[in-house]
Image 1 (cartoon, rainbow, N blue to C red):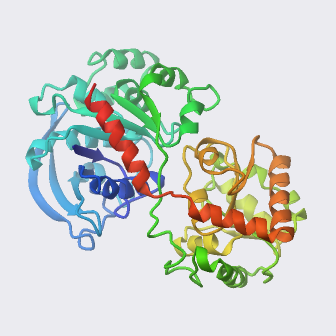
Image 2 (image 1 turned 180 degrees about the horizontal axis):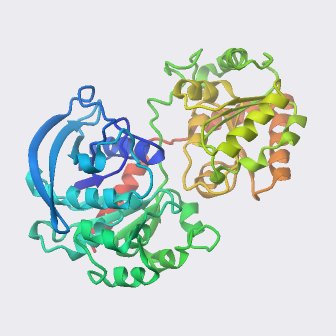
Image 3 (image 1 turned 90 degrees about the vertical axis):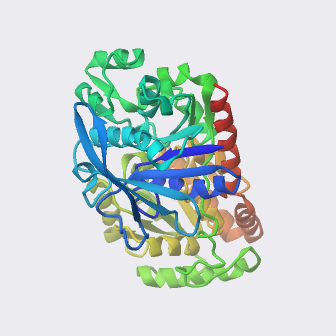
Length: 468
């Protein structure tokens, strides 16, 4: 089975969010299942060509884009530590920047990348059975394949994965020519264009052979007006071809027994050592050191989706400490810094991106907070359980699919009081029922969140697509 995976982000080369983690972690698991999986991404200016041993394999390839010929170079490497090939489209006019996403509209950039990722297939001698498209950046690939005159692209099937329905990739109609499309290329395009623009996410949903998102619960949610982000009608049209596949995590990297970033390594058999991470972390953060006082961690982008409005001064009434790590919207950064300033012995707000500190929070916290408004999958709760930190989450998307009363605490509504009550319940069990607490920690650490299980589900989806 030959799989081609174009992605705007691939860790560790260039990543902004969870998409990069998925694109970097799923392919090795597919390779172990005997898939001939290959990736392609843009060659951004930020990618270190020497560090990742990139090799130029084709120069000055002329890619027809609208009425222009865009010259590109093709580079090749491997996902680090694997034999999974990855190719890079070197088109400086689109991707020379030292960021993944340029300011303003990125739709033309990624439509060109989508077309070029298909156009180079005969150059590299690869004839995939399935193109696995990721999010709005490559959502136009099914449209391009349905409209193509190129013989080498005929018969290729598509799987389209929605990581976050809210980021839809809306472009001006004129941008379609970049991918050698126009409003009359497909009925879905002419219908879409009636409101004056083109919605890439909508096109992917309507034209891919198989559509999936990253948890079973999120599949159900996006068919409703509450979570459908204006596309619930289109999602419901594809109900028969819509599936949920939970993301995995890199269980080798997220392993408290050998994590090089944490203060004291431990495992499920030496869980009694975990508190040492907490004491050192408390000292590092300037919080009072107390192994008996629960420490609640939050590692997140600080945006509306994450339900940060539920974190208020009232939480200072709880007998615990909080540490927040992340960056995002200014209003949320200032809100958390305000709590830190007013209650310095209760709250620590670390407004930055710090991978090392994130690992130390997973290892040092007793509880891990995710009060999200919506969460397609969520990785934080899985990582937290791997480290014996008990999740306190809202019942949405992947949080609802992965956290139950055996491993954590779940509240239903977007409610400050419900969050407060769930934390109070967790604190009570931590302080007064240590046996039950340890049982929850162990149950969470035993959960299998490896990519192996998810990869098997994706193979099933590829096979379904190939039968279309």
